[in-house]
Amino acid sequence: MSGRRAQAARNDEVILQSARAVFVADPSAPIAAVAEHAGVGISALYRRYPSKEELLRRLCLDGLKRYNAEAEAALAALTGGGDPWTAFEGFLRGLTDADTHSLTQNLAGTFTPTDDHMRESARAEELNTALFDAVKRAGVIRPDIELNDLTMLLEQQTAIKIGSPERISELRHRYLTLTLDALRAGPAPATPLPGSAPTARELGERWIPRHKS
Amino acid sequence: MSGRRAQAARNDEVILQSARAVFVADPSAPIAAVAEHAGVGISALYRRYPSKEELLRRLCLDGLKRYNAEAEAALAALTGGGDPWTAFEGFLRGLTDADTHSLTQNLAGTFTPTDDHMRESARAEELNTALFDAVKRAGVIRPDIELNDLTMLLEQQTAIKIGSPERISELRHRYLTLTLDALRAGPAPATPLPGSAPTARELGERWIPRHKS
DNA sequence: TAGCAGTAGAACGAATCATTCCGTTCTGTT
DNA sequence: AACAGAACGGAATGATTCGTTCTACTGCTA
Image 1 (tube, each protein chain N blue to C red):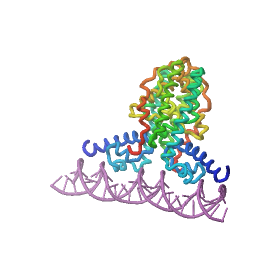
Image 2: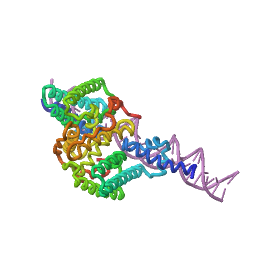
Image 3: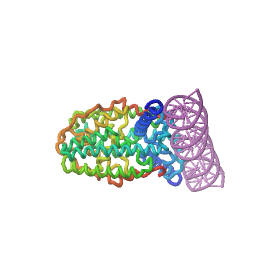
Image 4: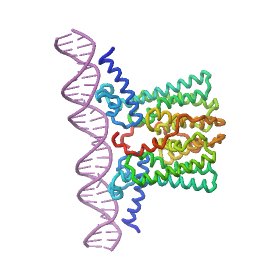
């Protein structure tokens, strides 16, 4: 399968990825920005999604599913007899990599949820509770942390927006490491922080006015 | 001094506070939202500030000054022989209360900075370095944390936006406590977390579409 | 080679928003 | 008592942004 058909198939992919990249960076970005990022025309978008809202719904739903997949994996590792803390850390690392919270919490409110969203969301809550209870029962987490604290902690990561996606990921893992140290029960292991601290240049760059980019 | 003159003086105040509240919650909010929040007409704003940008500049400058004031206070406490960790914690608590990072980092880029901003910013960097070096030298902070990490950690707080300003503050202090535990050198004290975790209701509320508020 | 799936991007229309402007109300002064 | 104007509320304005639609073009594919 090649030619026109192939380009279309390729576009399916590049459009979704571009939408993810653009809307994760700026949830209120115009749809034209997605087209530009993908290197396609606007009509290529509208051929696939009837409206911007529908595209956002799709992205968010994918995010929810990805979240649930990570949770299921962690839960499986846990009930399979794996080390509780390792499973828990892997869970949070996975979510950080997938940037699921930028896709769900940051997009929430920009569209009216469908039944699918409700379903995945409910499922997420189940998995969450099961996972958290298991980890809590294993006693590897400090006792005054509650389930919903995790959501907020992960959501805080979305405020880190500096430079390239890779750099962002590096920084998020850096501070996740710190958070994990704080989350862990018992004596602090003080894991060495990965990555490097922001530079003065990175921090200063944000003062230049950005009307058009 | 009363009557018309008094109302004007009162408006000076209420307008600034409203602008802070509105733009901290949403840096791209329309100027009309500020007027509405303040309970005044739009012209009351334009009488005081020639443009939206000027108002933003003012807010940001106030934020920078507040930041520097906190830093100076902490530095004074430190060189005055106070406990280094207490001074450091007080510094971060103060910044969290004043929400200086919402006023500076989150507003940066929405206007072209003036010389005043540059000046205060440079001053902030001086104070920062002095303060951080002193705390670092005292050995109360884990060694792999660098100066600019603090900025990012504080900036992450600005992602916490749930419910009333009081609730937001409570949650930010809750996670600041956690971060402080992670930041501190040596054996983890595991300070009890203040406030209460987010509720499912608080978390779920964000899924309702918000086109008009 | 006819037809259509697929596309690029201009055109359109609605909405948003900063700013201006006009008419009104009060106050301090003459 | 009457007025000059400070201060104000909010409608009108004009520019801009942005989602969506529409037209014209391209090159498979049957």
